Image (cartoon, rainbow, N blue to C red; front, side, top):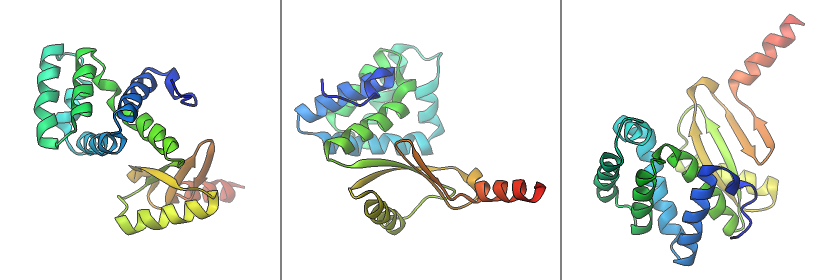
Length: 184
């Protein structure tokens, strides 16, 4: 097993590492990553799919039927579809979001990229993402893969986390700082 830099320690990390190694050995990293992107979007946009992955009352058989029904319309590759079945059979669908995040980190490392977790108040368009990647590449000196999250509570700006380093230019943080300075 390749060094996963701490990812393999958690349950989701072990699943992500197993999926990554299967994808790598099958030379299907890109197609699995694309399928996981579709699943991430489904988790974000579909309350029904989210419920399927988090419901503790669904039987293994019902969970398996549910993910089988989702795999085809989403156009998931075979490896990812089978992997979803394994998660359902092991009652681990609740780990899906973390598995996706860990897989992306492993895939980025495999490509020699650094991964940045970017949180914005509103979804970023393709041009904004390209600009952000370019600025991060200049700052870090290497290619950067971005994991995008939306959190309206930051009000505006961005929060960028690369490893243990964090750049917080959110309006919420600026307002908090201003409030502390005014209390003085």
